[in-house]
Image 1 (tube, rainbow, N blue to C red):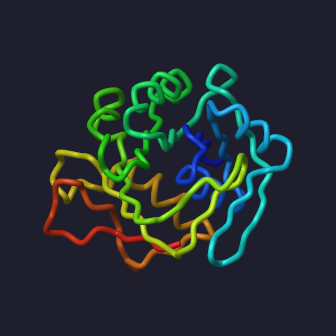
Image 2 (image 1 turned 60 degrees about the horizontal axis):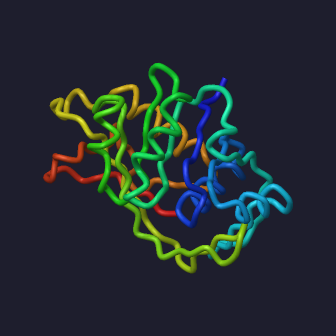
Length: 202
């Protein structure tokens, strides 16, 4: 059984990254509070415009009060000031060992770690100019980069945590994502400024 993921916030970041994962066949659901956006996605699918070819993917999208079941990974893709609301939304639906991923340019991992612990928290820094064109339609004009970091106080030699293995697994199994750090066996802790961070290019 694969990793069940849920994206909280289906704007440009959540829509583009989550949309690629959905197209690649991952078990991923989406949440948003914008009624027009949700209605458009339910009716016509999620339209994602990227440099290597626009695509449309049918996805499961819900309002926060409609979420059902448990998920192994919650991806937080809301504006920073909405992080507490996003956490209240996702935490009741996270499995006991579930991971939280902040897709917010490294700003909010400490807030996530307060709720699930540092070893179940992933930070993501994204260099991607993107926008929501219309309800149900997100777009980026460049092939851009994001960097993942484990938020942990453990020594680097202990970095092969379940969170590192899980996050690498769904990235490397996706045919739409490739790692530029061939042979990397673990992700770089946020505090370790001397080690190269695995950088992933869409």
